[in-house]
Amino acid sequence: MSQAKVNLPYFDKILANLEDEVTKTTFGNHVHWGYWENVNFAQNTAQDFAIAAEKLSQKVYQAGDIKDGFSILDVGCGFGGTIASINHNYSGVKLTGLNIDERQLNIARKQVEARGDNSIKFVQGDATKIPFPDNSFDVVLAVECIFHFPSRAAFFQEAKRVLKPGGKIALSDFVPTEIIKFFEPVVKLFLQDFGNKTYGNVDFLTLANYQYLAQTIGLNNFQVEDITFNTLPTYTILKQFSLLSNSPADQKTNNILEWVTRLGLLRYLILSTKIL
Image (cartoon, rainbow, N blue to C red; front, side):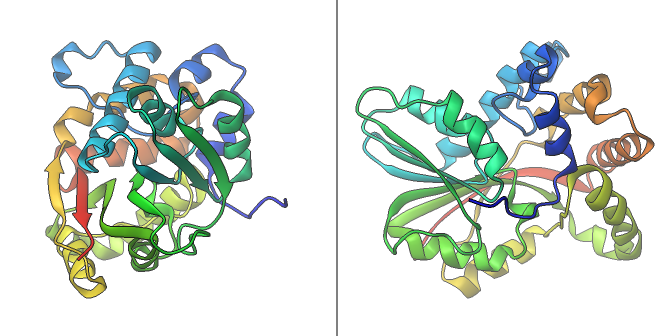
């Protein structure tokens, strides 16, 4: 299968350095922010961050009300960390990881194996054109990846299609407050650096626009859990982790992200909804 064209500079760096012990510990399973119940106890180490990243995945899939025996699709599954966590904690589950980047899936297939009566498969595909039949899954997850999708609306339409009646979507995302619209020109300039040089093609969506999408697509309003404060130690790790902070563009991007987050202009939210 040919490699889909993707613009993910941070994944390029991680993939090129996965043999490095620090890289493997920090991002070998989960490639997303961490969650700390008490940020005062954050240890600012690779090991501590890996535990926090695992906890963030758990927070997202728990918002999806996962149960034993469910069929679950993890979109933007990365190296399979969320799939591995569900596999470890639930029984009789049918787990499918979907990612547009075959390189990431190759890693996931090597390091995640089904336990007990669970099943696992990793499939290359587009989140806006999910390659599965209608009514295939009980839950669709998207852990810190939806900002890469070319269309959130198309993703939600597809997620609704492949979910069974009463199925649920759960995701995490960086969500700007409404005041950000007054700084739209500045945001666009920032995203040019943010997208092209550090984290790839990204965009932001306000909570009001999320709720509007839910209404127009036929979903219940999103339930919201704001975990911004619990994710803040991630920025210390990014500064210490030279792989993602050794260029002026990376430093600028992460510094601005931290600044707007601490000012309350950008929030880290867990969103969940059921199909109507």
